[in-house]
Image (tube, rainbow, N blue to C red; front, side, top):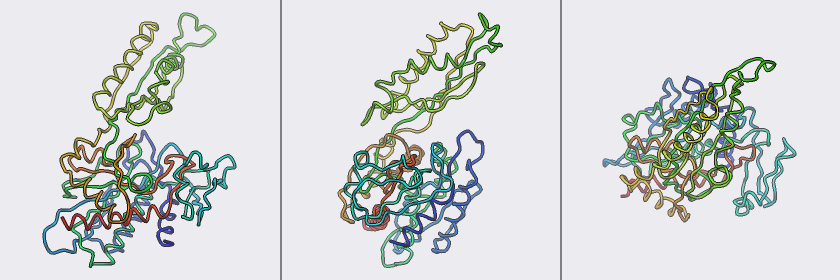
Length: 409
């Protein structure tokens, strides 16, 4: 467990925060730094075909230990962290033999992991909890996944008596900004099923995600000196603010929805009097509902166009990803074998939905059925992010069992 902890802490100390709006892939150089580290470690484990391409995608193969032909499966994790919270100078804090109480974070006296807000902690007394110091995120999303895959690969490579087929390992970049699999070559991987290691807690198999689009609303006004603005100025900031105030946040926002409810989520705004723009996430488990959400935005824009005839209001909707449910139905072994693997390590598997997306959403849409497995992530994208070392270890054990299940069926 000390080696597992050391590996995780080594990964989270590399600043791999993704950056939106950049043309490069990956969007930040730190992702390449971690990718090179991972490629070197896969090589040291003696995986075959280890490579890192010009985009920072790292791949390698755990060779089969059985003579007969078996289908290949693929394991995925992403190296980047969220652009929403700083990932620079991460200082992991290790809470060994956790005492079951609230956890104050030493870098910020206002940051406390409260049991009331983190009920999962109540079941982890005596375990090893890892947090940041409260001034950055921790990076368990998805470096817990990286750690679990690397640990499982090390265990399989160290014990050739474990029967398994070929396993492709793939580490991607820029998942947090929707570009994680832009340069993944499914033909090269040649797998029948994939698994992203990017989920909460332990024992969960996420087999549904949101369907997702991104709306960009741009308001163009007319700027003049405010001293002579009467009858001339059209303030794009005021119109944008009015637009946002008309969105139904009381019943269609992340703050007021859960379960299978969709939402509209404005999350970034910028600009000035002459032009202002903002981005809105469109999310629902039923893909046709996204068109309804887009139409709602257009109805607000139409009303404001009538009220401000000198302004121009444009809405651009970009497709992001789709619910993996339909794609997974084409390869039912992907989920069924994950359930069996979890049972083999003593877990009771739970099928669950993701109020978001993973690389698996797009991989499934591209033709590789890819559910998402637990890795011990909690409070992702936040300075209050934390993980449990034993849950990362459990994720690695599930992967080893998963390899065996695919070889025995």
